Image (cartoon, rainbow, N blue to C red; front, top):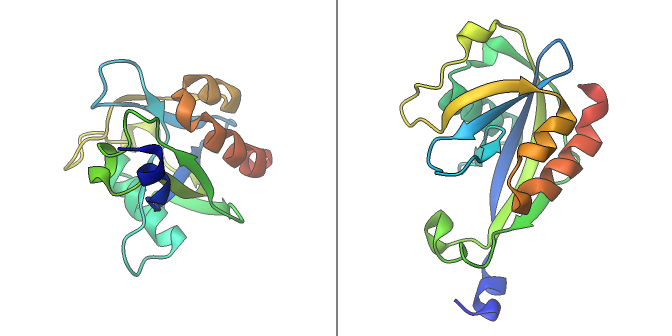
Length: 160
């Protein structure tokens, strides 16, 4: 795909979930589909007709098995933040339909216990998970997504 063709592709509308525990830590999961370590927070596309909070709650349950009753939404980013895929992934990731993602981030407070987090969902996204300090999360995220995480943490981090 040429750079002009890539630039003409839209961004995929998405949500990201910043799940915080009561000790000021955030959830990160090791992607199950990557050979090299690739950590991220739950995230995914916004389905037709969904608003941001609804999509975030759906993604949280789909990816780590937490129903809406086990979290409390505390904040949502004012504007979406975008990232571009690396050149080698454009045309391959997201079935070749998008050049990257435009993400609204939702800060949720975890109201449950760690044993309620279940990675063995219908379509497992993560092979393992852990709670980390927000600055540690930034160091774990793949470089091409790091700017989105920095922006989300800058806006939502004070509420963690």
